[in-house]
Amino acid sequence: MKKKHIIIIGAGPGGLTSAMLLASKGYDVTVFEKKSHIGGRNSVLKLGDFKFELGPTFVMLPDVFKETFEEVGKKMEDYINLIRLDPMYRLGYSDGKDFFVHFDKDNLKKEIARVFPGELKGYDKYITSQKLKYDRLYKCLTVPYMHWYNYLRLKLLRAFYVMDLGKSVHGVLSKFFKDEDFKIAMAFQAKYLGMSPWKCPGAFTILSYVEHAFGVYHPVGGVCKISEGLAKAATESGAEIKLNTPVKEVIFDGKKAIGVELENGERIEADSVIMNADFAQGISHLIPEDKRQKFTNKNLESRAYSCSTFMIYLGLSKKYDIPHHNIVFSSNYKRNTEEIYENLTLSEDPSFYIQNASMTDTSLAPEGKSTLYILVPAPNLNSKIDWEKEKQGYRDLIISKLEERADLKDIREHIEVEKIITPNDWENEFDVYKGAVFNLAHSLDQMLYLRPHNRLEGYSNLYIVGGGTHPGSGLPTIIESGRISARLIDGELKE
View 1: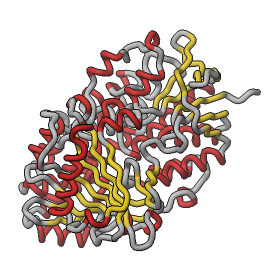
View 2: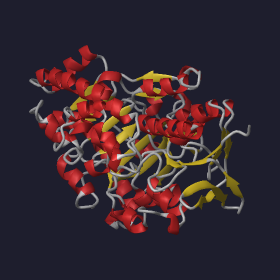
View 3: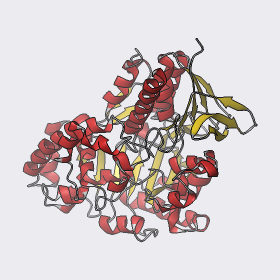
View 4: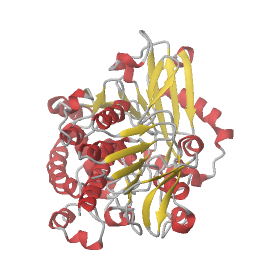
């Protein structure tokens, strides 16, 4: 009997997860990737002899990756070598104090007592409460929400009790902590979703808990090794990955997806199609307008999106003795988030993140040299900022901040290579709708059943994976989206 054929559009980590799982079950899997490399935003950026992460810079919840490889009879360690970081990161405040967030609990508690005396008791209560929230809530993120009555699942009903509905991340943390700077240390993780802690739903306090409970990891060679490992395992299982092969559009018979048309005009049939692209960009470019169902251009435009980022990648002729991960906070963090999310303006006093990966991984730069990855949260393209006009001045501002706030006083003298990516570039060069690199916002009206479904509603045989569908943004949840869609396809094609 002829194998069922699955086409996957895009070789990002979610699509590669689905490819690996479905190929291991005997399906004929073809992945079409428009670029010359795999990974999407989880790929390597090379500038001369220097290698950088393009997007994600760390791994959380390593068991998600381990279980995914085990599902196809493989060991993650054969594909990805993870190093747990301790300290996980350094937080720098405008008054000059640094807070080193350790994974080791004895060292962490000593550091809390040193920097934030009086907060230890609240910290212990926070960890206890968030363990219960995580244990109940994460299970709800591993299953699809295709129908409204999926809300009646017992495990979700039990999770509602601890989800802190109606509260923000900052609001929940205010129950445990008094010091505003310590609240920020436990709340900034909302930025992993491209949201403000004052707006992000209170359920996402589990993000800081996940770091404190399970750690933060660096894959040797960079986070791009996640995609490379998934691709290797997928091809070993029989999947075919075709690079430099852009898809023009999905082909339909009525509401049923029956294949794709490539940019070269070739039409290829399939039993199911998975779209692993930025959600809104993929819908508006890969689905013919007369097949859009509710996802019209007007509908896509009206949805809430995450922030964007202003990126600087520096290859340096020197190594700096600062931690692997560093976050430097604005003097007024709340005002900074309002500038990004509400006022849609460029901040004169921005917060920013620095990855100094060469501190841990010598494979990323020549001997004696290093890479620096600088991420500055910025408004998405709803802001109408003229980035061509602003980018050089904003770059110079950030370099000055690195010198003033991050122990990088002579950095200008050591820059050998440099690249800037603006929100405009994210949209035009990397196919990210509105430059919103964390995809659709994770507001209550865009979560679970209210987020685009893993089998896209209004269609049959068309599935989506990635940050724009359930369960949302972030590498572990994107992997989960790939697992969910693969299970749906396997269950439905076997019927």
